[in-house]
Image (cartoon, rainbow, N blue to C red; front, top):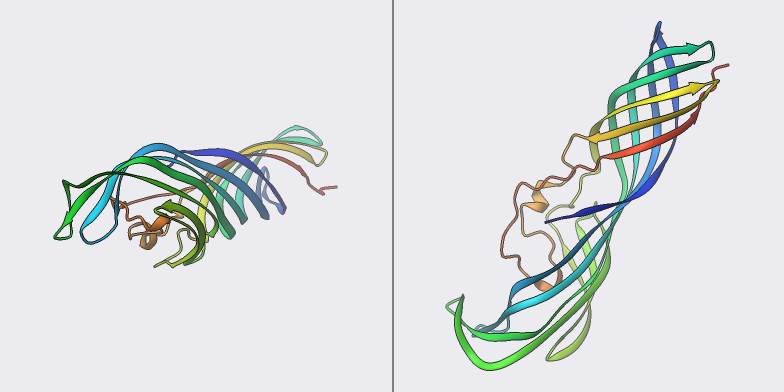
Length: 254
């Protein structure tokens, strides 16, 4: 299960503020948005590691991984804006409308390790995992990995180190059926602002409505580190990145 934590970001752009009728305006713009967030996984997991067509290693492994995500995108808001005058040079804005998001880059940095000293060997018969002991030995297993991944790409390169009988440092690559994330998404922006003599302070919430996760990637075998096949194939995964923003702006009205 993903447990994302917020790191924050920034947004910069320009907009046109067009009066339509009396207190009703149209605000349309182009913005560059940068934000980041994390996912951490610290948990003991029951693992089965196939060694030959005769036996596998099974037992509990300690896992400690961190994913760092960085998103850069263009936002195109098209907002209906209602104005409540508070003086001749000040007013309150109430803004609502759709937003188009176009992803420029989406990177994930992965780092972490899997360790155990208590694996046991069990028989692997007729391509089936059994609970029958293969021998009385105890095995250790140590994996570590890191890499940068483009979430808009169908190709992955990563680096791993491992210790299981032999030491090794390996650079690996994998072609995917589809990229993990979609570049083009749609959302809704709602916000309010106070403007005085062209200077405005506001708060807004951006709600992503479309699912940015590609079904073809998430409902398949996906990308897996350390040549491990997941015990459960996930289906119906949805990801919507929404955020709260605070805005400082200047409008050339006069």
